[in-house]
Image (cartoon, rainbow, N blue to C red; front, top):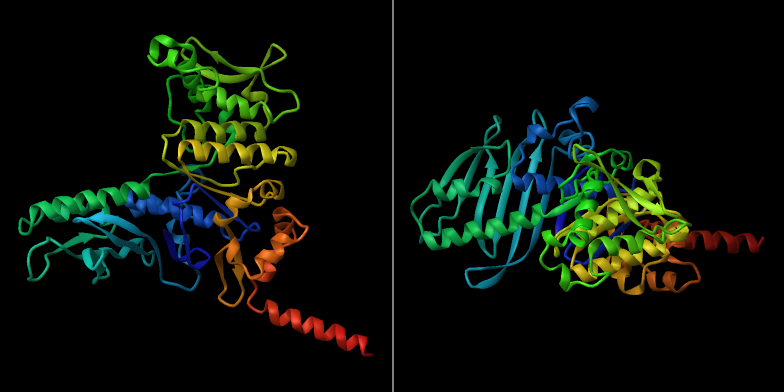
Length: 441
């Protein structure tokens, strides 16, 4: 479970990303993007990225991980924000609950002010800032019997969890076997937090030639042409791939991508084509009526859909993928095609996918089984913060979903947000009484 405290417009929120498909819905500005940025920021912190590299450097210096940089992550009126991750993990022969949390302050400069990892009743490490210069006092478990746990001072410019091995190596006392198991445990937790592939495809960057031979899609999908070409090679160049003869038509990722995207335009695609220069740069295209239309002539919506499906088909099985506004630019009549394709890929490849949308057509395409993992981002005027509520936890949601309106229509009319307002029932009764009093003249 990822959780966020005083992060951007959230006082506190949590979301379970262990599900195959998690969907964030809500109005523009409701906080969907902030949650996604929180997941990405936690991954960067777990990796050991220094905080000073996360400041807003301006448009000429490249984008930060979060909009506005690390300084704009603290909720208005607060001094710091916290990001955390908890769950259950095997450690020392039994399954234990674990909780990891990192707290960052940005005044007068970005620094970690608190961080800990607990497993069961054991504190693997705990760090607190006791001086204003950014230095952390870190206490850690060396698995020795009794006595005072060792301490070490580390600068709070990056996470302690990314430097955990430094702690254990700095102290020779304790049980070496348990210390090694703790290092492996921390590594597993870090890898899980870092495993989120935050995918934000930018169509204008997909229209340029890129160097062939790339098989990992970048966050902005700028190398889409090379990745598609690589997937095509798996099918068409048998000398490079020994298992080609063991596959039938349709078993290749390139075929599955084509099967989905050819349903998007009015005029179906026949196949992918690739224009390669002498310098081995490539630009992909599609064949329509025996003519190649390259990426420079495709619409933003078509390019985004190709990129989304390519990302899900090319990433390692079991990965986690986060896609904001996955259906941006897609015509409503094609929304069902895309959402069902995503569901099929997620199930087949055992992916964990977090997507956000406010497209009514996509919401109307959701099957009943997927509603349990739909979350509504909404504003609470009492706490002056955004909140995250499971769709099925909304008051009287069964009645709302059984009404003639579809899910997308309910979102468009802000029905769920109205039911989530703190004084919804009181206001509803007041309006009824006012109506009755008018009838009485």
